[in-house]
Each structure stands twice: as C-alpha cells, then as structure tokens.
Image (tube, rainbow, N blue to C red; front, top):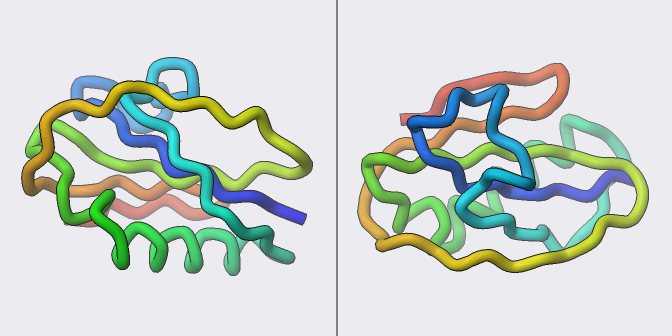
Length: 98
C-alpha cells in the first residue's frame, strides 16, 4: 500500500531537492492507495479540494510523493498564504502545474 505526502516547498528549492526535511510544510493524505497512479491522482484531488493548492504563495510549490509502508507524521510552521503555482512529482510522473 502507498501513502501520499504533500510537500509544500519554496520555489528557491529545485523540485528534486525538495524533501520532507527541507519542505516548508508536510501534509499527510489520510488514505492508502494500491498503485502509484491512484496515489498521485487522489493526492492531486486532495490538494485541489483543500486550501493547500488555493493558498500557495507565488514563491511556493507543492510536490506529491508516494511512499510504501508507515510514515512518521510531523508538522512544520506554515508561511504566509497567497496564490501561486504547484509542482507535482511522483516517481514515474513529473508535471508542472501552473
């Protein structure tokens, strides 16, 4: 089973360099998925239906990663909110959302 994590990252951080350790915020999607494609699509829908995607600043992007097994949840402080673009990355998939 796969779990989706949404990483809110600074655009100053290159997409491949955005990790759980340097993300501005890490959001755990409360569901599990059978395939990478389902994980990515459902995580994108989760972002689209929440304030995460709507409230990104112009200097932020989001990255979706799908991981196997259990994860350690943690919270980080969130920066000021605004409108911007989003970067979605899942192993095997990479698309820039504007």
